Amino acid sequence: MRILGIETSCDETAAAVVEDGSRIISNVVTSQIDIHARYGGVVPEVASRQHLLTIIPVINQAMTGVSWQDVHGIAVTFGPGLAGSLLVGVNVAKAMALAKDLPISGINHLEAHIYANWLDSSSTARKEVVKFPCLCLIVSGGHSDLILMNGHGQFKKLGRTRDDAAGEAFDKAARILGLGYPGGPAIEQAARLGTPCLSLPRAWLKDSHDFSFSGLKTALWHVVHQGGISVPDAAASFQLAVVDVLVAKTVEAARQLKVEQILLSGGVAANQTLAQRFLADSPLPVLIPPPLLCTDNAAMVAACGYHHFQAGRTSRSDLDVVPSLTLG
Ligand SMILES: Nc1ncnc2c1ncn2[C@@H]1O[C@H](COP(=O)(O)OP(=O)(O)OP(=O)(O)O)[C@@H](O)[C@H]1O
Ligand SMILES: [Mg+2]
Image (cartoon, rainbow, N blue to C red; front, side, top):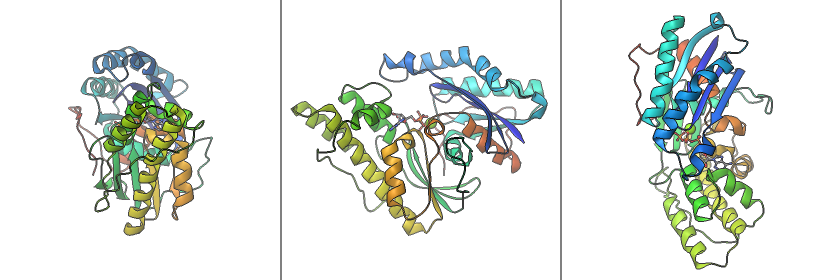
């Protein structure tokens, strides 16, 4: 069963065709990073206009060599995200579904991030099959959610960030250090040249599964403004503080809940220091998508859509965007 996935929730315009929820036939992502970089973050109006310009060429490219007759349905992100950006993807998907007489399924972007773990990729040929119950850590630009997944479509949120999301913290720390946007890759690169010699605070919030990163960001600001510290050392120290908390709290929650596996997803899961620490510290198997499937893409939307269609979960033709949609 082939599904066309469409993703426009933030600043990536993406379309992909995925077979049986795992085999990637095509995966096209155009990023607007260069356009937004000069503003230091995503400008919503600019993002939606850019989606309008690129969405049709991106879908056409994803459909190259694929016959519409082989497409079983269209899966499209309808939230959470920027309203104007989501509207472009949802309306194009609805129009295409009508024109091609295909069913449509509105997909929660956070659920889609988790389903990146079901995708095959040439760099990491699937060794582990996902087993339920599993504990999902979504660490992205807008979220740091710890979610118990008991089966397809069954999610229970255990923890979230109380302030900045993990990716947002990386982006703000990069700005403090005068590194580029997006901050995650810039910090990771700078950290390779430094040592984590600064002692920065970790918010353990031991009575809950929640996270907090704003105190760490403020502490970094104070240290940097006192002067005398190198950018690579500051980047390595900041990265280690985030990694320490994410790994320790997730592994502890997995132990308490007696889950089978830990599933990472979201842009921050592309961070190799985080990935290596999870693999080293977790007694349970940890599944981590390859970096290109951690950040926003439409293959994960199509993979998620496959399970929706399998379960008969389709959306009506009046599907609308829900910018503040949550999961669990
Ligand atoms: N190598 C990396 N290390 C750390 N963080 C990273 C890395 N690569 C990307 N990120 C961070 O991931 C975030 C982008 O991830 P993603 O595309 O999943 O977020 P989003 O879609 O904007 O937010 P959400 O999924 O919550 O709506 C950015 O904050 C970016 O800095
Ligand atoms: Mg995302």
